[in-house]
Length: 217
Image (cartoon, rainbow, N blue to C red; front, top):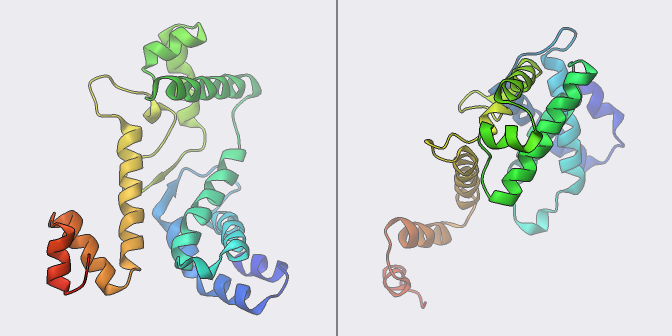
């Protein structure tokens, strides 16, 4: 299926080269994601979904911005896979509408309060009891759900806040940011990488760093 997607796009040497060279990245991303796939869907389908993201990344990447293509393409490949899976909705229509209503209310409350709501807050906002919220959450959990195998998944239930626990959204966003920063820093010239390390990790002043590197501030 991956080869079929490559051959359906309009030929352009540079873009085609990027796509072909980064098929291993596509397979790596799909391989790190674990799915409870429904009948009729297999790993090749995930590669096909990811190929859409890879092609889009190859079409929109601007080399002059200095960002490695793999860094640029990674979130687009992963996002394309998740987007297609989210469109594959296997819930009965009535239950699906309730899940979507709960999801929308969850997002609204998080935007208003700056943090994910508790189940109690969500039940009050929807005008239902906690048992109904639990039932809707169970439906969402039984639907197609994707997670990274090296961390907790972002299911609907995981987005609800436990008042006694750290904010999972903030933790996830911080971990994602750290991963992105590591990738970006690794792409920097050696001297710039050293400056960042000395400034943030060793907490040296700029003048101290300048002395070490024998440059001006």
